[in-house]
Length: 449
Image (cartoon, rainbow, N blue to C red; front, side, top):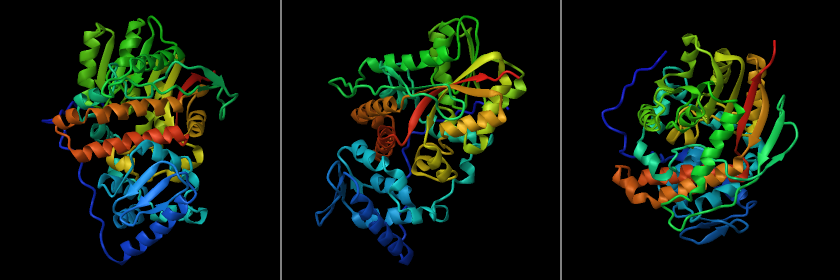
């Protein structure tokens, strides 16, 4: 189905709802005591420093500093809600860190082993499940996307570069071949980590970020074989930069999105670039593509699969397979996690799904290869991993976001929103800096029948 453009009366800039109060009672007392013991045991194995106030007790082996301002609240929240409670305790100010991303990077590198293995087996019994209204069905998907991307175009413009690219950049570094990847992957390249670079004014970006975003897009277009006359489908418009660059190559572009705010600004940017006749932007769920009967020489999608949901990965790739013309190519940029962690965390409700991306879930490269091999004629033939580049991209976004605090508040957001987004950006940066998360450009071609 093609969705109706239903713009809200005003942009949702009222800030985030406050975290719930921790209930008192025996259950909270017991779970807090367990959380305290597990946290102390984990910290004792980590290169961090944790200071419990007001006693001044110090934990850890030394390293990035975390201050527990209200330990009782912290342990109660973690005991009741696990990692969601950990993040919410930051939002309430129960703990803080001067270098939030640096601190979070240390435990992120040991995420799979911080909880003793016998307790990990109980995960399914104690971990909250993803709410049904967050699942990325056709009925829910537009609301899920709107929750994040329709906050305010002006907000995103405050910390993104001038290309308005909200995905990992690709800085000017070399690629290292690492041999074969999982399954049928052919060329498997890893991008050399970039050198951190900043402007003197943290509210401004170094110009190489926009160049790096352009490099990322141009490589995807090259991988998809986009040239003059190519019929391109883009799943997930963003704010239109990829569509503009594809049209500049002489391609005709059909780009779809579920974000009303992004659609409107993308159309304006495309028209201003002089490509309104080459690019058609449409508010559409990817599942509706098959019914259109259209086919494309190239399909490109940048960091959209994360919103699909694991139940629908087969549908997503089968749809791409169905609309891809003979000889066509597919290039997807995807955030991924290790396969074993992906299997262990399916259907889990997390801090990220609660506050940032309802319905979001990260695949592994292995499961992408498995799904495409079993349910489509697409074959994964190339991979460029650039997780270190996402860590640097996020570091720059977070630095600029914090420097734009007054401008963010002027848009109608509040201090809680600032803490939510700082934690989100730092938490994400830590995931990539530690290697727990990765992002790859994946190339697919069709197997001959």
